[in-house]
Amino acid sequence: MTDKIICSSEADSSYIHRRLQEYNARYMRETGDFNFHIEENGKIIGGIVAEGLGDALEVAFLYVDDQHRGKGIGRRLLAHVEELARQNGFRRILLNTYSFQAPEFYKKLGYTEILKLSPAFDSFSQSFFLKEL
Image (cartoon, rainbow, N blue to C red):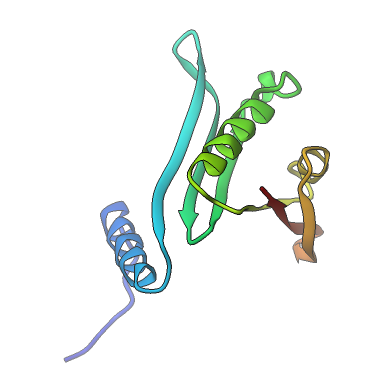
């Protein structure tokens, strides 16, 4: 028997993610996904993807369309997920961002930078944030 490394398809990646979730469930309460978006005229202008792990909610992605930045879209999405996190008994929110994204945005919203890798890649740093609820 010979094994080999193969480039994963989207279906393969979903399988791998599902298997990791099954493994993690043995050690921590997994409470599912908290994914939302805002539409304007049928077009997605911002979205957030988060997952509950144990007593923490981890924000994987927060995106706002370039033309809609600075209009409170990201703030609304994050506030919505924070409220749901409180309602579902989470104690903290975790997330990370790069220096070319929005580290100051998270600081303004009460997130504490707990780790900074500088540089993380090329000349960019990566910051990890925590907010106790």
